[in-house]
Length: 359
Ligand SMILES: [Mn+2]
Image (cartoon, rainbow, N blue to C red; front, side):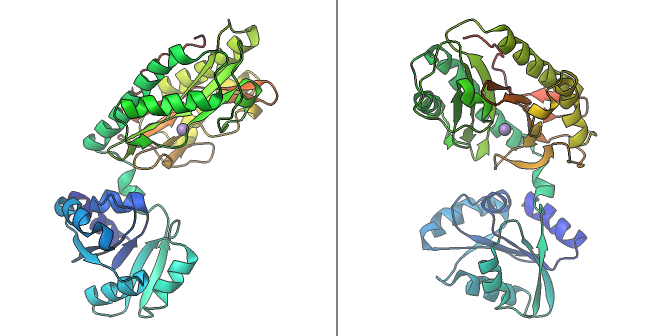
């Protein structure tokens, strides 16, 4: 009920008579419903989850503590949604919000076309105003997801040998996470070796890992709906070259600088700059072509971000990644990623895996 009460506060502040929620993560956050299909219709008096026959029993159980009623919608979903909205605001002129980053144009037309008396108003990141500060229970779920990933990495390290393919490494990592209690991955695992490690999001291939190559693994687990995110870079089966070691130490120093300097009250841009200045001063600023990090929770990428354009001030309870990288086309890439909780004084580091270049 607490989340619904807070959400209604947002409705009042935004002068909305009601709100339609369609995105899976916000739907789950507000109603507790974990199914794959359903629409929330919320105003100051009513909160309804409209879903289909497959989910009626499950939904009734899941929404119990969240203050929602469950109703079945027709195959014509948007007709039922419009009728429900008409019913709870007696068809009078009203202003309802929707998630413009999620409701596609075809569905928007189907909905708005059936309720001319209602002004459907686009919003962006509306529920995120609640979701960006994680509760103790949410942080506990993320912490568990991070622990699973850390343990899977420890289990994987002895398996990182020349001759193995990127796909084999990715499959083992995902299997270990499942063995350790993950519901699944938070996104498809990235494993990229040798020159391919210069691809920040390299999809694993049948390429065999050769001795002395860099290997970047970026993956995460899902636990109780919440995500972890993790990257380590290692040199497999040989001592690192001088260049590999120097660039690795530079990325590590950039990450440690950000971890030591960030705290609540800074903007995402200011935190990004902590790491970016270290890499830029060494002459590799152009090769760090992505943001320093992103929030995560029910989704792998949430707001606010740590980037060169993020003006949002970080509040305590924001959980985000810190993941600087350097990518040299044809040579390889290096990235190191931890998950942290932002606090008044600094951060709490959730990721505990060692940061060793050699395996
Ligand atoms: Mn990430």
